[in-house]
Length: 291
Image (cartoon, rainbow, N blue to C red; front, side, top):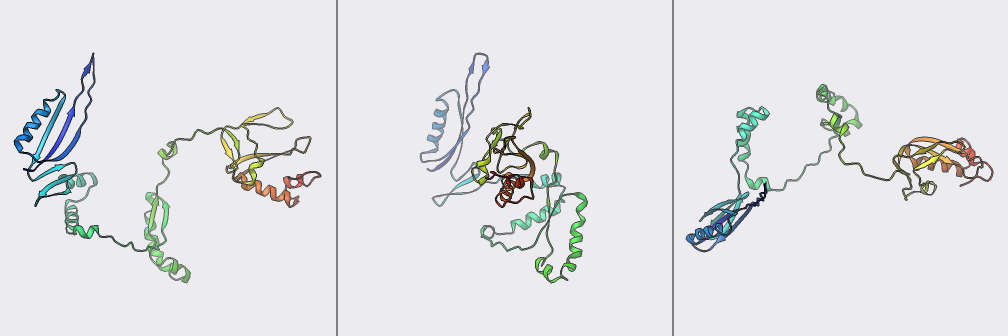
């Protein structure tokens, strides 16, 4: 006699002094029982008597049983499985939460159930889409843009070049606008890095970078502390070039929105080409000054 068996076990903990500690282990086991049903029930009884903290429930059947998210059946001497689906009040949830009309939901459910399962599992080739999208930041007042794009589509087709680009009506996509959450919450925790200036070890500027977390302005008593991590790849920085050949300690302080290596490449080009149209280039045109 073949019996399908599902076992659920709850080993419960014990209490210590005045603090009650309960350890609950819920495990599901499904196996094929080849002995008689009487022996199965006897096994279940003996198992629960093994320890007072063990409580095992038993569900068994000669033909089918629900195990986790599957239905296990014995048909023609073979074990077959299928997906187990719970009956949910989908219609009630959709109507109440999203405001759909019950008739619309019924029509769509009926439409979905008419599609054969084999058809849904067939691989479908994706059609190539060359439509140029319109991407804008969402605003409730911009809903009219779709109508404007549709009305002006014939105007685009009057131009030969634009007609090839906009063969069809461009799809409209919205990006999420800035909100308070994005402003105050980071998607990742900030990395704890050492403060100071460091070479990136990938460019010609690295050999001119001084690895320091403080710097002093020559001929002054001012010392500044660098609070962040900066390298040749940093942008939007204020930088200082110090001439080591001048006894007076000539310096040049500049700022750039570019990467530091890009800006210093420009300075090196002016120096190497003996160009005197910039302060740095003019200074290095002096005697005994070169890189």
